[in-house]
Length: 153
Image (cartoon, rainbow, N blue to C red; front, side, top):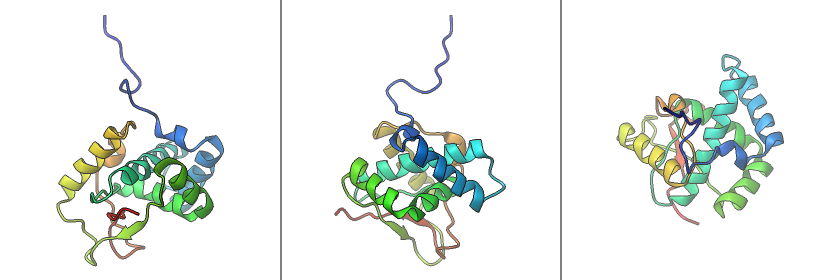
């Protein structure tokens, strides 16, 4: 007999970190800013953005970066400054800054950065939605790629 699990045992759905109201507001922001993204996909993106921020805060000194899709969720979250600051304080214990990379917009060693980021999310105990992590972020509105603040504090 085979049993299929919806998610691996021992991991948490990162949407639970946000609460229904905030997750809904962030999902609306993603679909408003990116009408090509469905509501269901936007909700998944928001969850992965929460996991990314939570994991980033637990890995100071590591260069972690969102995927292109997850970056949409991070940017939406940052726009809700009060909610974002509260989340960082409550979940991470400190503010997780958004720091653009070098001017060319490319993270060095993108494949290793991706794997390091996904490992950090899993290590923090959150489910990784692999379909949303295909490509590294290219934040053209930042004029560079985006990553968490590698400095603690």
